[in-house]
Image (cartoon, rainbow, N blue to C red; front, side, top):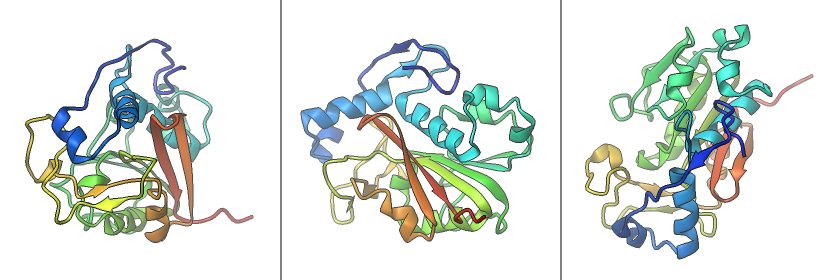
Length: 230
């Protein structure tokens, strides 16, 4: 396996889940293992984990490049891209060198009502953010609104592939981040499952592709606002 962010082929592993979160999500030992790989297997050069590499693959598909992300940002095509990066990820440092890049952090910028004009961006990117938004379909609709007609949304969400998505309303509060972390921006509203791909379709996107590094360890979604026409 090679890192499609920087091209390095060496990785290190660490465990990221903690007992309370494992219990709250009712995770099996197999699910714990692949989520630990998704979040904890990291490129030794750029620090991207498998989740970030899957997101890089989604972006590479969206812009139709065989290059690594680091190579791509040095092209004239990349410099013309209007990019909205919501909440940041391991890819943000790489993308932020581009002149039309904008960073917007949730919840300071509300994904459900963003302060941007219609059709303002060519690419919207977010990573493991949608589960923290109270109404994820509304957030995805907003992503579609600010995209140009030929624009793409590329994102990741933590996904338990052996079950369907569930809303955590009425359940005890659950948080991602540091095991002692609380706060609105870390609270999980939605636990995504095998039907996670349907959310952008329900939000009005025309097509969805799933990109993976190592199934089910790390997947990312590319959603296109409009279908290509001849």
